[in-house]
Amino acid sequence: MPCFALVDCNNFYVSCERLFRPDLHGKAVAVLSNNDGCIIARSEEVKALGIQMATPVHQVMPLIKQHRVQLFSSNYSLYGDLSNRVMSTLAGFTPHLEIYSIDESFLTLQTLPTQSIKAQAQTIRRTVQRHTGIPVSIGLGPTKTLAKLANKIAKQEKTTGIFNLSCPIDRACYLKLTAVKNIWGIGSKTAKKLQALKIITAWDLAQQDPEWIRSLFTVTAARTVRELNGFTCLTLDEVPATKQQIICSRSFKGGLRDHRLLAQALSHFCLRAGEKLRIQNSLTSRITLFINTHPFDKNTPADNRSASLKLPQATQDSRVIIAQAKKLLTQLVQPGYRYHQCGIVLSHFDHPTTPRQADLFTDNAHQSHARKLMKTIDTINQRFPNRLTFAASGLQTAWQAPPQWLSPHYTTQWQELAHVKCI
DNA sequence: TCTGGGGTCCTAGGACCC
DNA sequence: TCTGGGGTCCTAGGACCC
Image (cartoon, rainbow, N blue to C red; front, top):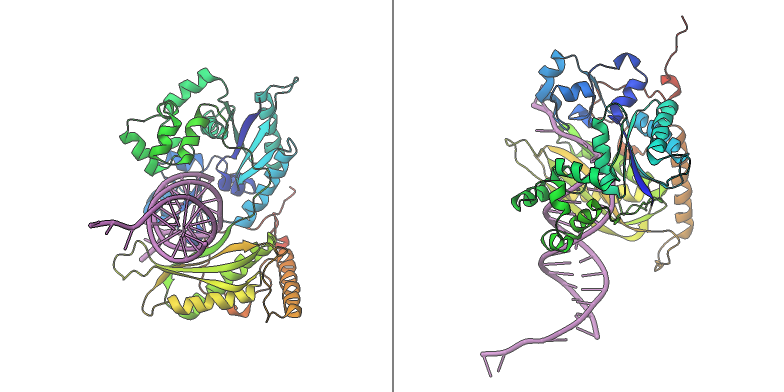
């Protein structure tokens, strides 16, 4: 029987930062979200201080200072690069790999005559550590849901970092110790409703009739019940699916009133979203823009709006996307408000080869020129990140506050490579 | 003063068709 | 008094994930 393995990098962003700062091993380290707003990764030492995930930094600043927590602004080019290294190492063990997020992958392992499943997991864990320097934990089980749960338990098993929920007797025991809210797929709303029905533990949920759960919740919750009992409902998605929507958005520290700056930020988002669109070779025919004032500021008036438009012709040309998005912005922005967040959503995708109704007025030569231009811009930006942009984005990112604790781009910028001193 | 960003799936309900 | 039935497509919003 195949066994699912969930390989999850421990405190991933913190591990990435420590890789080039060995002096930080054993010390308290935290990584912050965009705008240095919230804590999004914590070392064990920070968790021990009782600082929760997604806590706003300003709320725990006294604690951070008192315990000399080393802070880092998020450095996604570093984390993305190290993630690729971890995933390629995993791909060396099995072709059956699903990259689930930047720091997690599902694998299927087969029982080998020479090596037990647990021994295979130990080899994987050791190899990832040796090749990349990133520590991982591995959860094993007959379904993805159980592998996820096993991973959670593995994180507590400090010595081995591996846990297997394949044995039904062990499983019953651990399901009884797990609260429903800690099951993958059961969020806070569903957990609350389940608790009202006296379904408190994962074991309680596993005992329910899936059809009854489906009638009260959704088909997703019914699947979870089956998965907890060892029946596979969720399979391995080895080929990443084409995205159905692409979002690019940011929040602005202190908010923005100036329409001109909002338009510059928006143009930047359009370029980034267009790049992602072209990477998966899709054409978009719907653009949605949203702008929001500060959700926690009760003293200034709120204004949250969104608007969409359908393009007469599907496109992957960033210039068209920028022009249309700016029209939407003019419609939406109200004078006098301070906007805290703005973003663009591209959707209703097509593939360039999909047959579609031709437009009588389309200039084919222009279309071909546009494709070449976008390809050239993308090629240059891939080699030299952010080198080319549109004038609409402005010459400076004045809408973006500079990060305070950014580490060097150790692995993606020549001038920021780590220095090794020979003594 | 200071609270992230990017996704997926599911369901209900409206609009529309014959 | 009495106003069909069956279907598709689209959108918004909720819930969840990392």
